[in-house]
Image 1 (cartoon, helix red, strand yellow):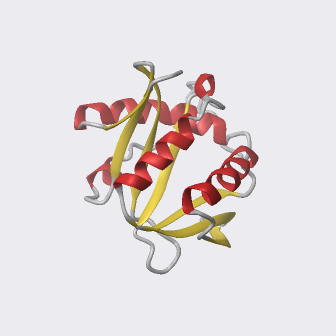
Image 2 (spheres, helix red, strand yellow):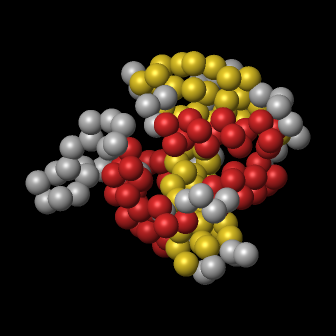
Image 3 (spheres, one colour):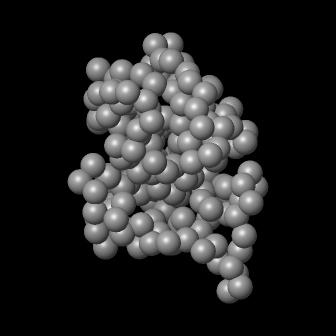
Length: 163
């Protein structure tokens, strides 16, 4: 059995998340036309303002003590009354399919009660399959599903209350 840890990122660990954003963006480039820069990196602006928002919470994910990804929670919501949103969720490919992301989401829901919004870009089929499998169980089938355009992209948005 693997050991999964989710811990709040300290200020000096935010650069680690910024570094992992290259891999997050690489994964997204399968569904969106995100070009590589001339130096071989994706042109990603630092998330300085995002980290400064009091409602942004960043977490590192470790599996058996090894860095395996990150997740952020923020209040950048697109549906009325939602309080929490998963801004970014990234699990390194090596650790996918082992229940890591499910553990992370379950842990966050247990830590942060209130109305949640979780969305994914429709073109991202792995995310579509993951959320469709996870949300019903984590919410006891008490959720609504909406189709919205977010930043010009078709998205599925799950909404639910977490007591």
